[in-house]
Image (cartoon, rainbow, N blue to C red; front, side, top):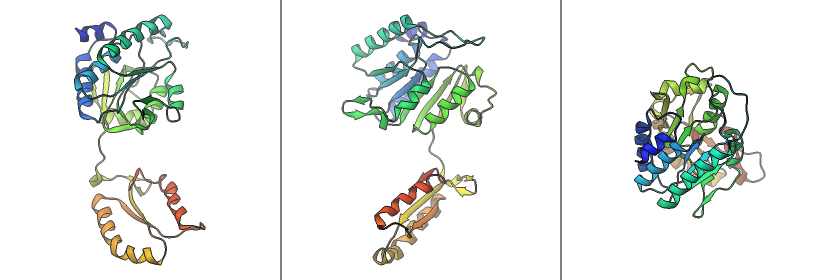
Amino acid sequence: MLLSLCKANSDHAEGLDYLFAQAKEIACKLPQGLPFIEIGTRAGGSALLFLQAIKESGIPRPLITVDPYGKGYDREEGFLPPMGEERYRSAMQVLSGFCLEHHLNHYHYHMTSEDWMSIWDRSGCWVDGERLNDHPFALVYLDGEHTQENVAREVNWINRRMALGGLLVIDDTENIRDPEYPSLRELWSVGESIGNRLYVKKEEPSFANVCKNNGQPKFAVVTIACGDAYQKIAKLTHPTIKAYADKIGAEFIVIDKSDRSSPHWMKFQLHDLLNQYDRIV
């Protein structure tokens, strides 16, 4: 019954059963509180589907939707026109009613994805005393403005905020099947194309197959040892730490020199390393 309602409020109903199964798997697997994100809400069909997946999982998490609705733009051939405020009110009524009935949390940002991304990290979206902006995303569904430029911008921003084990889904992929952007080409190489949607799971990187990036390893294990007392400790502990770094394919880095007046400021040298490594321990 509900899936029929989702299909009735969706631009294209093909593959919604598979989308629901994937969303429910993520909803059941990832920790509570990690939000589902949908960019491009329109009539609310897919948003309703995600709320149902959250409901059936029994693990509380919010759904955040982003859509400007009334925003005007030059329509290209093959693109659907923007939805107006009447459609916005109708979609929010359906979603709010479902959330009220089943005690779920839904928050809508009435703006473009570009505007939303510009404020997300510095805004405050709170649920039960927790700031959602600090949580990685469990699932992201991209169904907004489908130009390659816009999708690439969204993907690059979202990729740094996805939870490990999370799922990125891109709808209407006919617009990005031959992408000029490297980030989109990479998604096609690792994702699964089902119908008109691309599914990409955020997997834990393999330390055994560390790639080289501009001549530098992508991972580093860093320790700080300043002063005679800590140098003596380092003689005992650093061999074990280095062995661990070698085991996982990371570089072992010791910060033991500083041009600061106090050794407590040495930790800020990590800032320079962040430009060279994808992950630092």
